[in-house]
Image 1 (tube, rainbow, N blue to C red):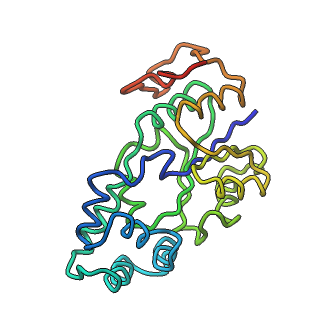
Image 2: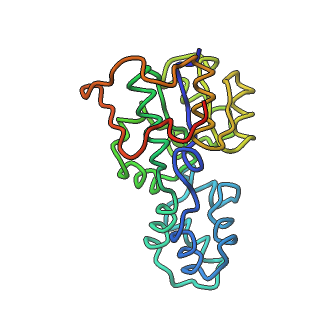
Length: 230
């Protein structure tokens, strides 16, 4: 039985590389969409350093500026477009809220994120309805799949790693969590995740008890089980 769910952000809780922001960023830089994604990736030196708070926003975009034809872009505009290309998925927010309020499951988000995009994310919704906390690389100084990133989340909860199910769309990040003793799940979509949780927790697909307003649950747009074959 798993009472602690640890989620990746981009590609799981949020849809990533969303349009039109991603293409607008590429246009601003004067490169292709694919090239723009590579330039800001967490796999390149500038992206790593920015996510670990080793460099400032200005220093990060100056490094990008050295590699693109359009050099007169605004750092703030580029940063805003990049941040806006990650949009929280309402179905996933509903799922988080539901399992917390109905079953008392603990949830948190583990991010490879720079401080500017982290602050952008914090303003997108009332995250207290959905997660206990965020753990971000700009604060810890570690990036997934480094083991210290995952251990920081376990430490925040004060639990052993074997009590945590880690969910990520990158198989390598899931494997790193499993190597530490966490359970792992490679994310495909919210419906498939819901079926995993039913199996993992032996949950009923229906409400075990009536939901009360004072528990904070609000199903805003769609039932969490909509479209799921049980």
